[in-house]
Image 1 (cartoon, rainbow, N blue to C red):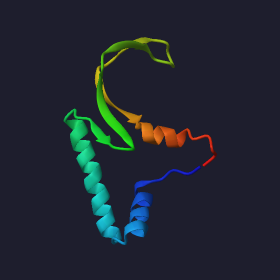
Image 2: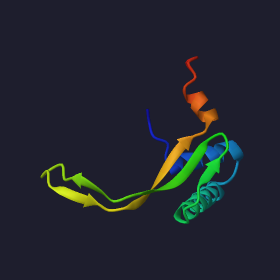
Image 3: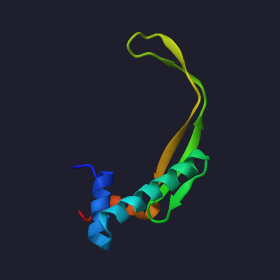
Image 4: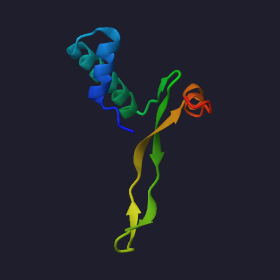
Length: 98
């Protein structure tokens, strides 16, 4: 199973819409910039039928350095989580072998 890259998505848009590669690339870059901007501001991004990205705060906690076993404090940070929409989840778990 291979990975779909940004370049691959642009190729698919060019094939599916007839846009030029430059137009498709600009559209994808704009789309990604919009999502990044919303997440940086702490807002969620939801795409119907696909899923939702959400920013979550993680508190500081104790952990261990796996190489030395030394106890360390892991700093608080924000992380992005993604949850599938019910529509996509159903398509991925379809047992008919699609």
